[in-house]
Image (tube, rainbow, N blue to C red; front, side):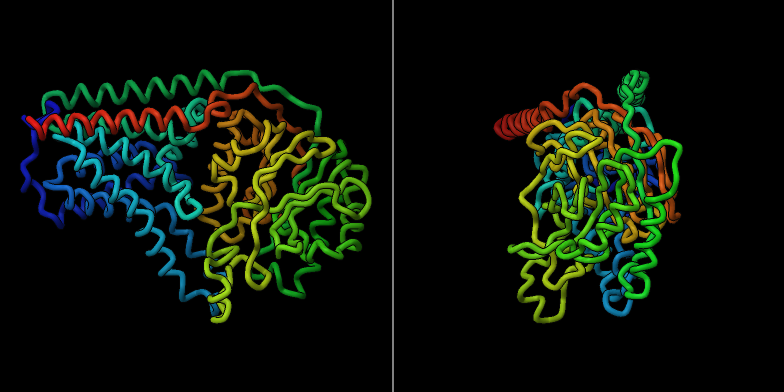
Length: 510
């Protein structure tokens, strides 16, 4: 019997090549849990197999490579859409596409490899190594949200976005739900093929079943309603055409027509997507007057635009209430590296390299951070521009609790297969975590009204131009997660890892 009570798997049960191949298959199965496939029934065994392979590795180095191989396949399977931005200007950026996918998948997989190495070093047997892997993989996800500005895409918790289980993010956030998921699948991985394997699998199913039931109960809560009528405008400007001089007026006029379309219930607020204003905000008064006229009696018009300040150029959200001058402004603060700006930009600019998504030389400069805007018809609004909606910390970092989240984005960069749907799924989880409704205006879709339980109450399909008129859902009471963010999860992780470390030291001394 191995330490921890599970029967040890012979070290030569798997050759190194077969172990790596099996790890890659496990990673692909884990990726199948994310939208648009959304099959947790495949993802959970994939995650369990990954943990088992790490727990039964002959040494820490083999565990590292198994974790890395599983992570490489997992991130390649979820992030394959990352090539799409490089295809917009094929002649200029197309050559970068394969390097971007390989680099992103391999780079993200390093977090899994490091988690596997540490887990194997901490554990004293199969069971303790499986437990350690659940803890270190969760910690790796938290680090991915912060290291090098962060990229917390495809976290394990997101395999639950189409199920009631995702409701538990209101209590523990994505990292907490990810920890519960990984601990559950680690139970059968810890037991392996021992007599207790069946009992461990049954316990794992019981834990996940309880989570499903708790989420179902929360979904049954009655959500409040408001009388605020909103209009989301989706111009559907294809990215390869969006900035062509002959197409700029076409898309702008389309947005004006959609804004001015008649309605039985006039909107209280109209929202355009990210960079929907095709000119710099500075000196764009004639265009703003047209926009204001199209919005009619609506108290506020919200839109995305680029603007220039003394610090440089910004990717901004502007609010027009009266006249042609913005009544409120928000500058995106969490910029996309290599998209909206380049590290060492002054040196790279000499080579003619700029951020892919930036329309200004040298890229954008960040704003000061999360801000609340007081907007007529909506109250206190927390604006999020594109990428910012995937970061829980960009929401709980607001100076106070908002009434509504407003997310403007240009998902035309992400293609039409997986990227836009994954982005929408993560946006929905931000609403659940905070118990707040979200209004999401996307250039090519999916534009959506999302209630405080993360349910899409109205939407415009991907790849279609149109406007969406809907009632703004109300907000819920502050959630536990909105009060304590990730501190409880971090405390559990640190306590668990410290306990395993102490057990390891005792085993060495014995």
